[in-house]
Length: 240
Image (cartoon, rainbow, N blue to C red):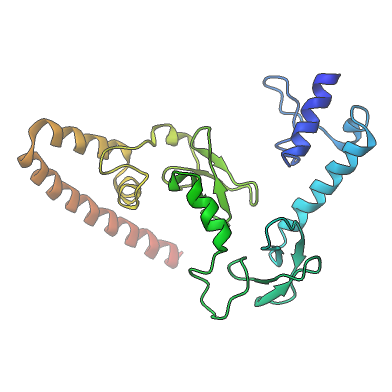
């Protein structure tokens, strides 16, 4: 009983209280742990924390909700406009568009909180902090595999290429010069596929310059064909 009680407490602390997160810890059992079942295992204090976290996550899904940008303030504000908002707790003024502090100009680019930017730089590897490709929430990855699930919008994606996660991403790793950690590498992998990139790199390594020229020609043809296919698909979708 203490084991399952501790398990639920850790889940609540990690804010993993959705039906697909708070499940039975037994292997191959995905049965969701309901609130009425938790009342028999944990105390009233933990149950109140669970309900608070669940309500907070529901509020976060509100498109008009924004967090207070002031460090240390955990207030979630439901904004009435898409301009600036004021935190009722600490009276900090924030920008609805970029979710940071309010700024003088309309453009939000480059107006991030300086203290946050200093922290992001202090983590050492700049690749450890990226924005969710779905909701733009900043995510810090310090360990684990490349299968990411945004805690804000529940979007599942690949950390390396930022595409929607599927079973094919087991092979989504870095390669020299064409690795998926670079914008160029991600574009190549989306256009040609991972297997084609590996083949091109192998041919260049084995045969040198002449193979490089030949691969470049093949690459140009493949890109052109890919563009034609995409255009035809778009036309069919518009026609349908």
